[in-house]
Length: 155
Image 1 (spheres, rainbow, N blue to C red):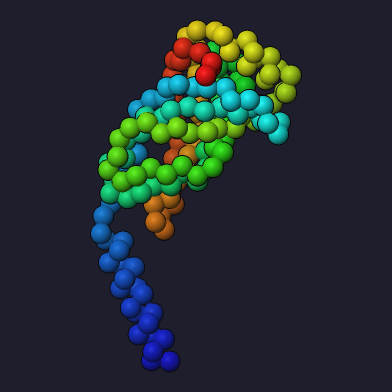
Image 2 (cartoon, helix red, strand yellow):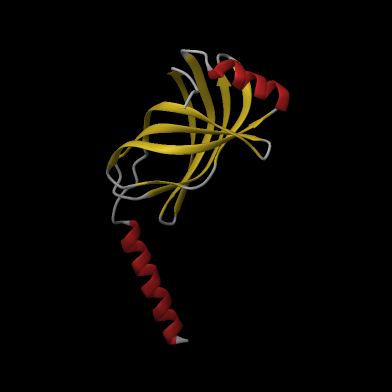
């Protein structure tokens, strides 16, 4: 019994020490470039974008979930999700290529919208939703509302 108590106190001490080692600062999304249409798969539209991210924190941050509304030229297209985990290195700044999946509300309207915007220049892209990330044992969900202007969806 005494060993269990000592072990519990030891783990609590290690946890308190690690928790006090530093503060996790929020990442900053500075923009997005190179939006690309990658195709249609499993009733989703596959997209990719280079996201300019600044991580001032000394912690590696893993983005686990992205859930956002996507609006292009004031036309709602559907929900945007990440296709996998995204890792942001500590004390880093630069572009990360992020694959997305777009679940469109109406399959025919969504495909026709992508065809319409594929060759169009100066597209207004708006995203609004949440991003969930982890740094070690700490998990955080933040709101995100961004607007970007892109040249086209052509790869």
